[in-house]
Image 1 (cartoon, each protein chain N blue to C red):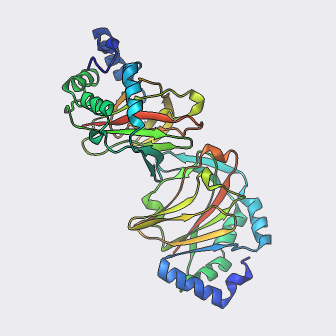
Image 2: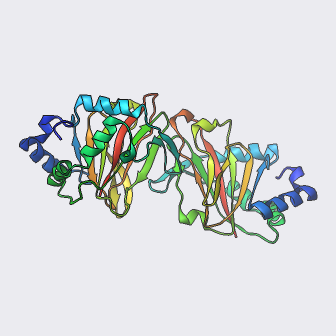
Image 3: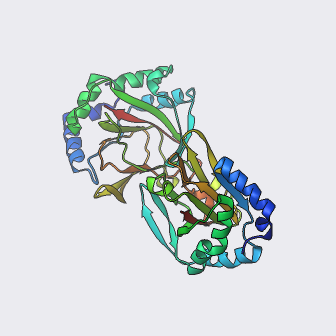
Length: 185
Length: 203
């Protein structure tokens, strides 16, 4: 499922050091092309729009293959080698974002587990459309994670680090992206 | 006050109508004054805006540009307008219509510019000391251009559906009390027309 380059000992060691020093890691082209295409077909499945205006608006996608892929032993084993120790992935959600959707900072989102990961399914996405994943940091400039398909972002759960998805504006038209989010304990 | 507002808004009948409108406001008490500001005042404020610095604000909740508190403005028209906002006459006028007690001269006042794709998501404005929120619109946008002030119903402490939209119209004033139920937002600007307004809170 994962690109072979990310399974090399040298690569994992580099990621482990980055994780230890920075508290976050971004990896592009995480999945093999075949697996990305296969899973992307599930990602844009039928979703249910959910809205709590003071917290979020997005479509919630239900997909057993996606949840299995992102909570399975392949990913958790790889994450364990980066984070140092055995990890467990729980609460995997698949959220579909289009014009008018967003998430706001909220306690429940960023204090869960020891870390969170985000995986992006997207075609070409212009940053002018909004929607970027941002990690607000109280004592540092925000981390901006551009929307690019097959991008994986792992971030430590800290009270002062708060991820959110910027409002997606009308310039996006009918373009959408899918964000897989998981909590690691 | 007569130098700033149109005479009609000072008449007894008009004030009586606005008192009723405020009481019947849904989903929470509010009142809309059309043609409140004189045309020449609106034009003067827009001219004053041209020399003000608007800082772009961006966070999870919003994206728009805003001036510093206009109490510090050096523009003649803006200074005169802040003086009007802080006057005992304006405070008494709003107290009579809303019944909300406030102190004349205790206000936060900002100029705002919403450009294409700018927005302010749902919130209630609650912060210690804020009694009334106000917005003076300085230009008009068509409904299809966005920028409406949208009010949401309160559903046991959380915001529900949008039940009212108030569109930007030059000279229009909107006033509502700040409370745990005053859920509102500014809808995205979906055109190339900027939305200019002066807004803030009376304490």
